[in-house]
Length: 95
Image (cartoon, rainbow, N blue to C red; front, side, top):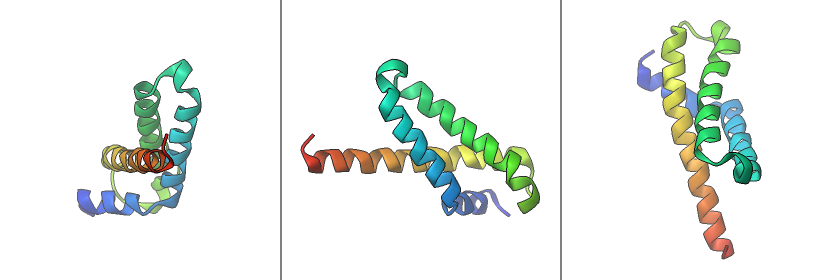
């Protein structure tokens, strides 16, 4: 698999999307105590490492480091999309 194919396959992973959605939800609830940037960045890294470490070993022949790097890219994009959709929703609601 090429690096791009790994990223595309990670975009289609529902488990990854749900984990990142939960990350954004948790960040919104705790942002007054912990801030925004640090929890999001650490959460993106955590998901990028934990998924290939636990689930990807049996499913992929790709090296772990390559899966983690692709995970950082795809997680950042997915988190950005979730935050963008949240902002659109807030503006449409008038808040």
